[in-house]
Image (cartoon, rainbow, N blue to C red; front, side, top):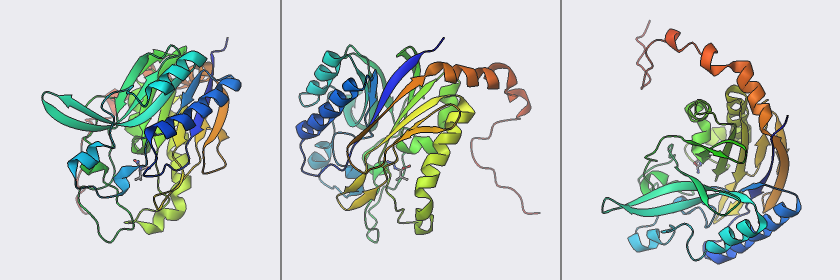
Length: 310
Ligand code: CDV
C-alpha cells in the first residue's frame, strides 16, 4: 500500500522592500495554480514569505518594525491566498512574521502555519533557534537581527495528523540542529516542512562561505535519513535588498536522497509525489521505540561541558 502526497515546493525569488503583501500573495496564487495543474495536495512557501527579510537591516522605529508583522492570519491581504487554496483544494505551509498580544504584552515571533485543503488552520509553529545578534554591527555588509526582532519560539516542536500522515514544521536555522529532527521524529513525523532565508555569506565567518550550499543540504539529508522522514525545504532566494541568498529548495526522501531541487534563484515550483510509507519503512528499520538505547546514554547534558585539559 502507498500513501502518496504530491507536494509542491514554491520557491520565492527576492521580494522588494516596497513590494506590497497583495503583490506577493498574487505571486503565490500563480504558484498555487501551477501546483494545482501539476496535481499537488500541498504547497510549501518559505520563511517570512510575505515580505523582504527585514532582519537584514536595522529598524529603530517601533511602528516601522511592527509594519513588517502580521497581526492576523489570515488578514485582509492574505485572505485571497486562503480562498484560492480552498477553491483549488490544496493545503499550504506559509512562513510569516507574527505580532500578537498575549497577557497584555506585545510579542513578535518568526512563525509558520499549516493549512488544510479546506482552508482551515491545522498547525502553527514559532521558530525556536534564532540566529544572528541583537546589536547593530556597523562593519557588516548586512545585519542579521533575528534575536532583536523576534522572541524565541515558546512552544515545543509539534506534529499534526494531516495529508494522510504526520507532519511537523521547522523554520530555517532550526534545520541545522539535530534535536529539531529527533524531537519531531519521536512525535511520529513522517514529513517535515521548512522555509528558509539563507545568505550565501556569513559576515563573521567568510571562510565558511564556500560551504554554504553543502552544509544546507548536509544537515537536511542526514536529518531526513536519521529520523526517517520526508523533508520539503523552500527558499526565499536571490539578491534581495543587496543580500544574496541561496536557492536549492529541495524535496528529500527518508533515504536521505534529494529527489527534486530548484535550479534558479527566482519564483520556481518543484513537485514530487512523496510516498509517506517510505518514511514508515525507515521508521521500522530504526525502530526508535526499542533500538534507541536511552538507558545507556547516561545523563543528558544541557550545556557543552568544560573538558579538563589532559
Ligand atoms: N533565517 C535564518 O535562520 N538564516 C540562517 C542564516 C543566518 C545562517 C540559516 O540558518 O540559514
